[in-house]
Image (cartoon, rainbow, N blue to C red; front, side, top):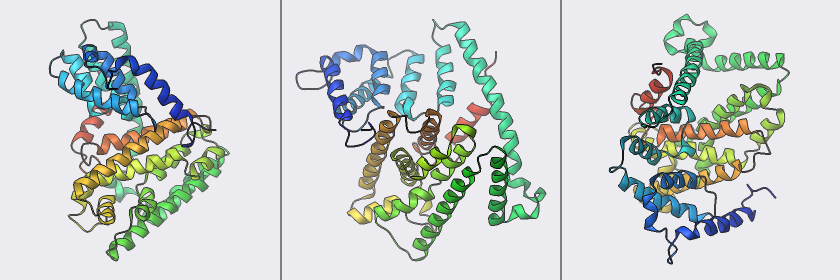
Length: 370
């Protein structure tokens, strides 16, 4: 039985194991002892580790709540490097963070430590700068698709449908050279799924229709674009992604379903107010409010619970990496992390001139002086 199966006894066994391990840190009432707050770095490590929780691990839910409160209180009383590290973690745990952004932030924090290793710091900066140069070259190659260059494009590129046909034809030709023509079939199917979802939402809008949450999510998870982006990422991963892996993806396994839920709900929660100022299809927020007769604030809280639930699903699937290779699962995880980076503190996709711009500058422009 797979540990990712919700009926598996493994999560409960793990919960019992964790409870046994943490018992010595808890008082007679089953709460964490306040004496733990003296070990700040230990508290921070526990906070980060607890985010890898799965369903049934209530002890880790309690650990997050306990460490968050105390780390928040202590963040104003500690040295600057440690405060910066705590604030970064409280804003976004390592599980939900993009690795290169973490590296960018932590190098600056580590440099402030009086006892830092100069050689290790130099190596970290060189590594960051070298990968940044590679990213800059890739951005340069992609920039020719910028809308400002439309007048220099051939006529067929100016029509969306024809453009899609030509793009997929080009992909198919490249995949044929590699003996991987099957990739294009799955990519086309996902594009069809995306367009069909857009069409369904357009009908809802024209009919002023508010679907149930179940009906909405069946369409909106596809319209989030996450599946399309993921399958195209698989196409670009060469021989790492086999036809068996694409079939696994098309069967909508738990980790893909969870990731698309995160993508859709995180977007809907923060972009709702802006989108509803213009003619726009209903979001998960309106659907949940109407179906359950609750306030907007109550609906937001419930949707965030669904996001937390979905992250636990992802963690469960990551414990069993045997169905597909680890690089593919990491791709799914990283694209979910993007959703947290973009939407946790607002609509960073629509209003990209704010925190999103700063993240892009940090990753692609600001190098470390050597």
